[in-house]
Length: 123
Image 1 (cartoon, rainbow, N blue to C red):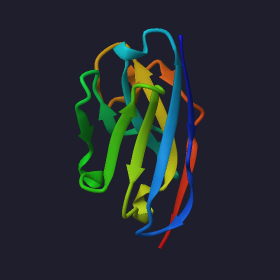
Image 2: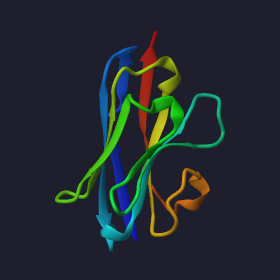
Image 3: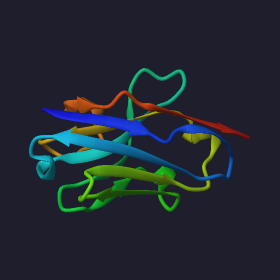
């Protein structure tokens, strides 16, 4: 079992920065693929934003490349998402997802989720 707790969301103006955190606890954390997913306003499905594979390789969707950075502190088992130069289209509920299986942007593949943290961006 894996437990995830997100924090760091807030309401910021366009162009600002935010850092989201996801504290992980549980078993075999080193074997997890982890990522950040966004549920945008009005949408029904979570969208993968950034994924960190087991070997530490980050992958991003095109819309956040060059602005977002995903990273992990193995000493504290905390996953981060540094969000720079945020845009109104970045707004939504951000979830940390984790799974022992394949690393993918498809939210349906992930079995472990946090409760989410809200990000609002004003133009």
